[in-house]
Image (cartoon, rainbow, N blue to C red):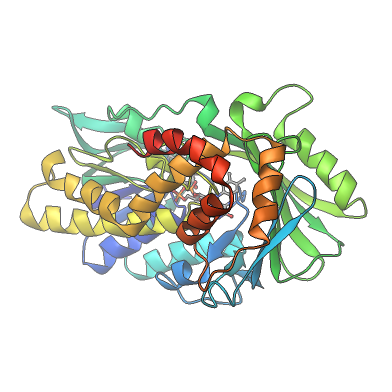
Length: 398
Ligand SMILES: Cc1cc2nc3c(=O)[nH]c(=O)nc-3n(C[C@H](O)[C@H](O)[C@H](O)COP(=O)(O)OP(=O)(O)OC[C@H]3O[C@@H](n4cnc5c(N)ncnc54)[C@H](O)[C@@H]3O)c2cc1C
């Protein structure tokens, strides 16, 4: 580890890896530090990603694709199903990744591009000079290093501390955190091409249960529930155990992970003097699905591109780096986050009866192309009572 770099990336998830690769490819000196001893584990993720989103960053490779998914099946509280097939979503749908391999592949590519990677290396505090982030204190194997950088990219995930240490308010209320539990379940009968989403406020309050195939007779099965709904006897894992007992009693559980996803609005500002914040650290996971792999890679790349320009221009002030903040907010991804936050606020006001009504009405939908926007518009059309929820929707959009 040297004592100075152009860019220091904190965190070796998808956001950090893509940021490090992009900055290194542009010829900058880059250090990526990851506090865990190994990249990619434990996997706190259902591992779903859209085909188009993935293709923007890396070609699909069987080494990190566990399953190719053709259908998404939405299941209501009374068991009614609605299938979104690849034929109506422009042949898109997606993959279940193997993130243990995927995250490593992304970091290897950053290393190939010239970035230095250090694992078991924790950013313990920022170096602050007159309020400007100028690097970080790195702890590794019992030693402490002072690493200076022209720009630090905080890609330290949902539990991010770096941005907070640097003065950005990163607080997320408990009501806007989904607490999650997930199992890898083997030896079960599943449709290997279909992702299933179970919606029921009784079985998954304020969230949903997913069954994402991971190949032959194996799936990533998990649940997210609203943080405020969790308690003794009704934690995410309790709900998940009841679901598994009812639906897959024959399954063998080979992995358990618990974690959290923020479903709040993004941080009010994702740049400061000498600092850019990306991915989950910037609260950029989707408020409806909790998905954030694509958003992390998208903002990781954008942050690195902004850092390259700022360093070349010799201006790494907040004013200069806010170009990144503006760019992601104006992107399709940024606009989708705003819209989906408003949809989530309406979703949280429902009950199982209303959820059933929506899934029933979806049986009658006729759409040439299905995407989130089309789907939401069609659901409103079929469920006029939803108009009463428009003030909540519009208030949340504001
Ligand atoms: C249960 C669950 C299911 C999910 N399912 C999906 C899904 O199906 N699809 C999807 O798109 N998204 C899903 N997500 C969200 C997805 O996992 C995240 O959005 C994505 O990993 C964000 O990438 P990131 O690079 O921002 O952060 P992360 O992947 O969290 O990476 C952050 C890294 O920073 C490291 N780090 C933290 N602090 C420090 C420090 N001080 N110093 C050094 N390193 C540090 C961490 O160890 C970690 O490796 C799910 C999340 C959960 C919890």
